[in-house]
View 1 (cartoon, rainbow, N blue to C red):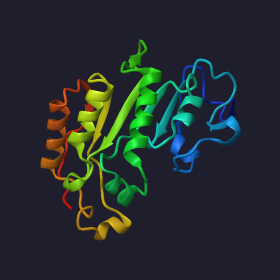
View 2: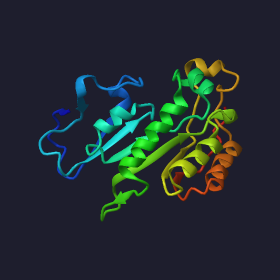
View 3: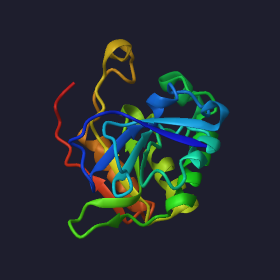
View 4: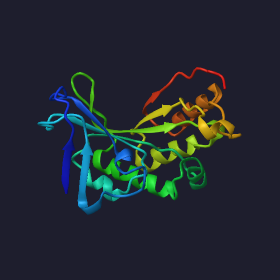
Length: 211
């Protein structure tokens, strides 16, 4: 496998963090790079040995793609969006989302485990943080997502429970998606986090901004 670094900002120095969006690299599809060659687009060049590679991903990547990046990516930021394939297909256009997402999360977990390794300055250098966006009307099935992560991965996995959904474009006219979540809905998501026995996470203080 060839890992090609592309970019040219010489201000990126040793010990810095490089962030790459894997979804952008694969076009948002559940696919693998062709011919075993993965081109990682980053801003920076030179010696990357002491830099931290952070990978943003929708969590809809093939296991083959993720294994190509084993030992390259230090911090994974995958999404866990839904537990219902019909909802995933309607809202995100992802067929067979649940099976693929869970396989991806298990592979990332195999690579880095549940520990978030910090350096002396408190900056994360290795691990995974699973992101979950709470949706109106319980469409994301937050309790189901939390339960699966706690039972199939670990209660020590780090989570980011996000409340910033806002409707745009076609969602504005959708009877379910055409509003922001309520404080009660976000509070229920935090209750689901606790009920699942999850121990580590970033939880927000939800403010009702109206519809």
